[in-house]
Image (tube, rainbow, N blue to C red; front, side, top):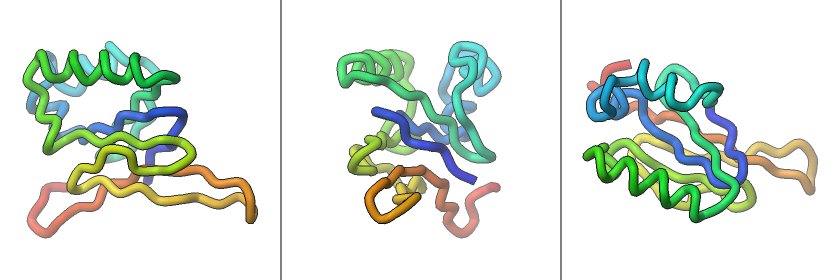
Length: 112
């Protein structure tokens, strides 16, 4: 499965959310209703870099594991801020139109 990239999309690992977001994954999903998700990832989209930065500042303030559980994708160029275990892939609808999606890349020994 994958998370669609719309405007700027923060892509977070569910495992990192569960471990470091107050109230865990259930609370995060309550705070962000309708956030796209798959088995391993959750996406939160922003129309501006300023709004995205406010979200990053919030995550930093609650000691979220940004380096290990957070990436950013941008709808025209794909990966904007990388994270091990999150991969961005172009999805073509024709030779001109392209969209991006984020997928989890699990390493050996990592829980599914």
